[in-house]
Image (cartoon, rainbow, N blue to C red; front, side, top):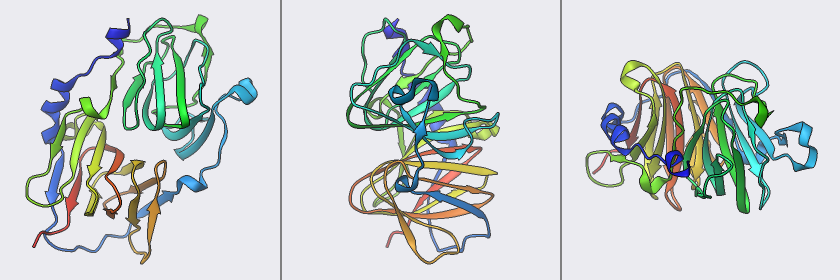
Length: 283
């Protein structure tokens, strides 16, 4: 059973990578008026993920949407070192990205496979599973398409025709932008942007990168997974430093100016349709 859960659909991901626009910025463009939201990791408000478990519950902090109502949402979950949940299910499918520490998520009898930071996994609705974590600081970003996010006992299990996915950054298929200098690379996780589907991707920026992340779609949601990202909010003069767990999002056509200075940055991006990542023009 553990082997089935460790499917790495590399061939599928590689075929779809070309659908993303990864270009080189040739000139500066002023961003259009838009709606932009930024949540710093230091400003996240934490509460019990499952209030019924009291102090044994992981902590959760909402970044966007609402996990308690029937709408999409994204939130952080913080686990103590050595945390291990009892077998349980969720009535909705969720997707997760490890921000820090190590996370194990699988059916109860599966061999332990610890996912490092930057790993992506999905948990189908209705499937009995456990979640465990180990490390000094264990944080994951969780995303659902329709709330509320609830925890039900294993006896309430039901079947859904969904295949779970589990993959770490080393197993992902990365597509680098053409050209010279510091260029971004993208790993596609799910969805086909050409069909206006909901897509999920990881964007890797090398240390020293400076450029833009632009969206032409109704909404973009992005979470810093690794590194310190300098993010310039359109129509404001000061940039903000976004630590891992920080969020920025926008509605409509938006040009986010970003840079990564001290070490490589990893960003999770959720959109419906296409987006582009562009390095500054090369001399």
